[in-house]
Image 1: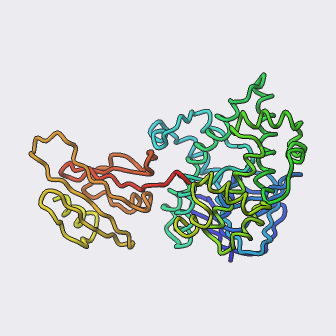
Image 2: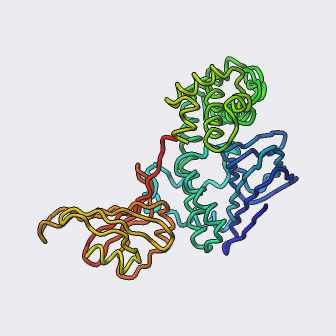
Image 3: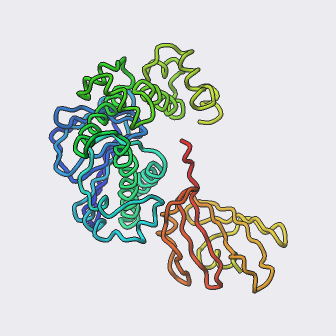
Length: 289
Length: 108
């Protein structure tokens, strides 16, 4: 099922629930692509990223991309396309009173930004709640002004996230100058995206470093500066987060989930899950999910 | 009076009645099938410096803000993000403050 809506100000919303879909050479406005079930694969230039639940992808205006859903289970995807006019109005009208809406230092230089790092961002906290409400109201065919309020807040929250995930984190790098730091951060983002896209595969540090065009030693050292953990720890956390999503939202058995998220040993999985979430997977499914 | 305002101006429907003279827990509902439990405390005197405030827990703060009409209300602030979630505040004609709060779990 595919639903598409163009709002009065040319913002667009797109929802798709399917097991199979393919779109080539897409080129749109600045857009946010989230997945709530299953997965969706994007090809941007030579790069392929897969978006799973708990993440979203940002694609800049004019970037060409292919989008594919091919899944055993039903994939549920949602996208916001921010019209150029809306983005300009947002930037022009952003004032100190708007800044007070979010408890984060957002400067006018950030707000004037129209192109962003095309990477996978975490769909957690406020932005997750906001998108979830937006989808509900989109499905209920609520009026455009209400949908627009949610789109406004989605953009506002994305700017906050961009500050936290890109600007703040890239400043942690001990690079010599700004351009070197930006390039290094981009490569580390490639490494992160590779892990988020292939978390369920058997991937090694060498695979990740080759994908990011960094030596394993350089990757290991700089990744830790940004994400406060090693690439291996990041991969394990991603697997556990996805396992938790499956425990909460699917009927897969524990052994199936262990295999689906890329673990080989159930007992190791249970131990790691308990260490991170303070519940065994079984307890989590029965009492928390 | 605050309860009257909630019912008459904001369109809430009372589902239970106050259980105590000084502290009351009242279940009210809106037109969208949402229910809120509100607690009101009696003002000790008209000169009481305590800022009377009702916290109305909601599941969808932006939606409530969108549907609340301006009739008789002063909007103190638009929906904004606070450590507990998303909130906005309004004043009724008697100076009572209402905080609409959508509590959010950030431990996820």
